[in-house]
Image 1 (tube, rainbow, N blue to C red):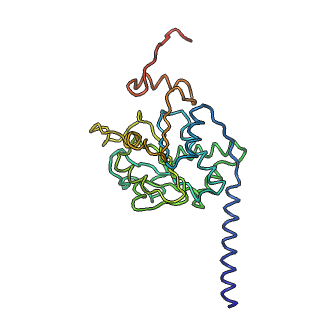
Image 2: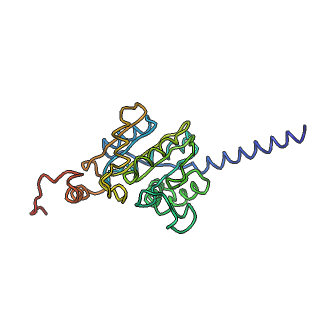
Image 3: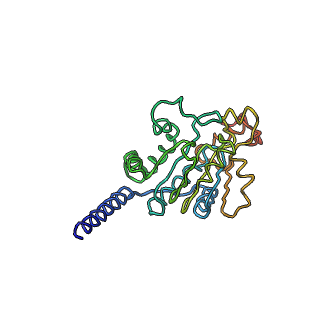
Length: 261
């Protein structure tokens, strides 16, 4: 009997240490304030819906708001981890063989922008941003994976962030969103104007992101937030560039004052 009690006591002590270590890592602050009404709408939608599709041009802060929401849920121990999922090649297939290294090394380049965003958030709050992100990665509180990793899995107690979804076909995106389990939310974002998938562009196929928005909007559990060029906060020039570059996607400039300084 004494041995069983010791084993149980050791197990409880180990769980206590793990819990304490987790709380120490999650003892961070994030200073964030929505800059636009659309960002406020997105934050509210992420908090209330199970799956949220986020569509819009670069510079609108859609990724920033999503990461902030996910980190807040993680900090408050409402979830166990955050999963970042990325398409990893232009072609419709999902082989990672052409990239060097193991799975983490293969996907890491795609994680770069989101990693930088998190580091920026933590640093702005007076912390060592890169150090906090590395701790979250090392303790598996944040994981990054290619799309093919999701096949056959059920994901519980997590927030899944799927980026660059304009480059996923509808079959791949369906595979990803049907992995959802208990107490899990999925954030899906992309920009239809930045499709680089050869499979989608070659045959003029509809992006999986647009297909999902068109077919799932009737479900109460689904949230859809669409940003426009008027919501760009990074630099006002981006809006002008996009409208000149792809007027069929972003609209046209109403007037161009060439004499404006």
